[in-house]
Length: 514
Image 1 (tube, one colour):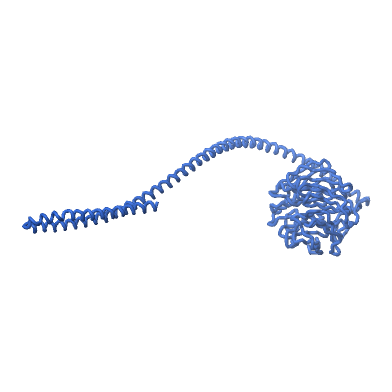
Image 2 (cartoon, rainbow, N blue to C red; image 1 turned 90 degrees about the horizontal axis):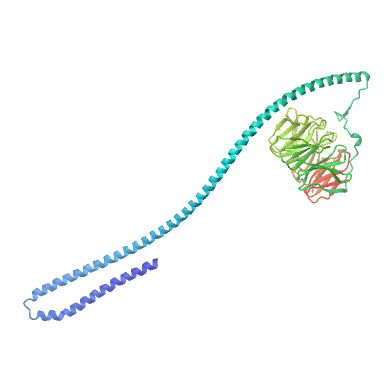
């Protein structure tokens, strides 16, 4: 564009110069042509010389004025040419601007059409949503009517239930009166026997099945390697006074194994999430699982059916334990920062403890009135289950507590933490009475479970390197290292009859050690 304008300007200047040269040449030619005639005329007309001279001078002056006018016109022509060139450049800019605006207008029209299409789709979607909302409102009205009907039926059932309770209370009063009569007769006849004994200053009932107890040996051989669960096994335990092993995994199943033969006895189904912890009632009749589905599931071992589904937590339930003196009370902890106490007879929560630090592990005390809890902040806490009050607290670990295990005599509680330490606390004073650690032992997760042997002489704990470490409680030294797993060991448990020891890893492999 600039090159084109420059060439036009040069052409105009050349044209002006050429015109000036042509005028001057023409003037010189005319002057040369008229010179002889002027001289010829001047000779015969001498008398008129002065007049002609004056005219010539006037013409000369007029010619000079013409030259001046011509010069002014030339300058004006140059100015007009420059103005014309500027006007052309301005017009070109305007044309470019118009082209850009037209392009932008086209783009805006396309965008507008796209927005119209989107708007039409949104309107159609809105119509569908409105229709669905209308249907849901109708369904809600139907469900409301059903709920009102169910509430009325529930009220009627409650009334009937209260009537039955009153009848049960009357029957219970009669049974109590009969029992008191029998007790009086026993006292009178001297046939009553005491079932309590004094051990370490604590009066407790003799443990059922104590005649089956054997001294725990230090396992060294993997008797069975069981592919128990898909996706990992996070919790397991033995039945009381039995060699039957119960495992729970991320495949939402709870399995029962015969460790004498290594065979699967039964599978408990119905859990809607990964099994994160397990416990069993002291009569071996009910298995309770803590699940990532925010619920607890209670199975009847004999029938294999779910008896209860305990709902109330709002986040995954990571720990559960049942009272050691009653099959009625269960305690659970979830990542909603609550600890709940459940009454299985009533089927609902009787107490909720709210605390700022999530609880990873739980254990009932031997008397069933208090519970131990291990938290993410590394502290071990003792709670009263009736009032929900915090009775005592101690800094057990520098990192999160992952496991709590109570000794068979109830005098010592074992805690494990993400700081790779395993501490033994005296239950009466909550003072550390032993610390176990090893260079290669690393706790694999926030829910890695360790255990105490039934004779309270050894501690077993899994490690992230796939090993199982065994310590002597009295010496505090490692007395055995079991290597069979190929992934992190998540939990260990010891049979109450002294053997075997079982361990499980992240791949769902369970090893039975003897």
